[in-house]
Length: 277
Image (cartoon, rainbow, N blue to C red):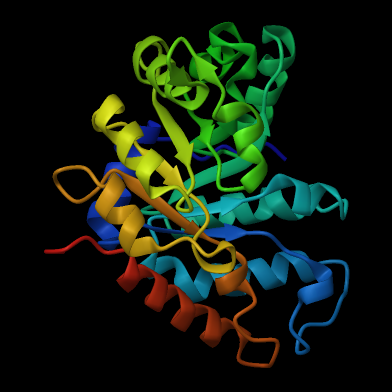
């Protein structure tokens, strides 16, 4: 089914979300049947029902939801993802919808990825791999959606390429400058910088001004939300989308899984609030 909900521009939608929810927290939707709570049977719509419960329990305390497409595709649950995206857009219009897909391909293929992200799923933004350069993201802008480029990712293996010296600066800084300059002139952009690297986050923020930064790595990956916000928030205390997934989704395996997810989200939201909010 094609998502027909009218989409606001990514940056405008994100400003709306920050203002309406007073939160920088993003909940990642990564449905893993092996970790579903005992109270949830494993019927054909289990992924949908699990994620909807999490969404309803946390929507008023988050600025964004970030479904990870691989968790749905591996289970042949793309129709459930479509339903969930429509549900978020129609039921919680103040929340930003980010499709975590990390796409990256030549323009003709990127055109179809853009149709997938913004036509099929109705996302406000999609995560992309910047390795193919500027022409690989033009189709996303043509479809009116935002792109969030991988910059300094939260995993240890990110050092393999992202830390390489490129003319006296690490590659991730070249990516940050490219996105904030060349790409941002074409459409709404953001960057991914892990909470596990607050010093790098501070350096990226200094280089990219008010560009939104998606910050994964708190919760299960051990990133410090306080350090991330101190390093990466903009002068108005915004600018960040601080993401947690497993620590919220699987806060309990019992009948109270939704209530436990809400409490975990409340705790994460509080931990990621800038001083003065």
